[in-house]
Length: 73
Image (cartoon, rainbow, N blue to C red; front, side, top):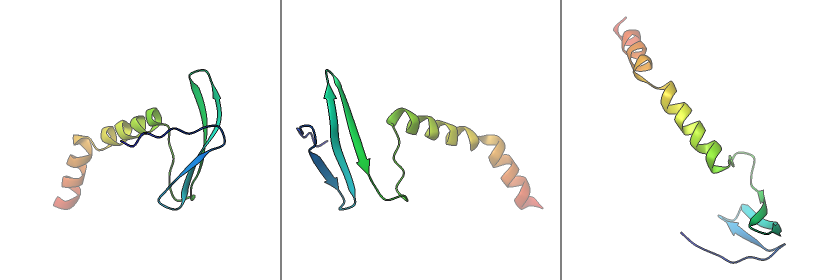
């Protein structure tokens, strides 16, 4: 992990097309802005983990059995 110090209104650039800017700092809370191309999804980590869990649940054994039945026909 890369750890950086940034002040309000300072930014960092990722892969030449994603910019993360520090918008505000209040106590232990930091507000950031993210500029990225539309085709790059940006999620809060807790939302991303929920999406991953949902995807795992939707590909359970029932889905595999249905797929196997489909190819048996």
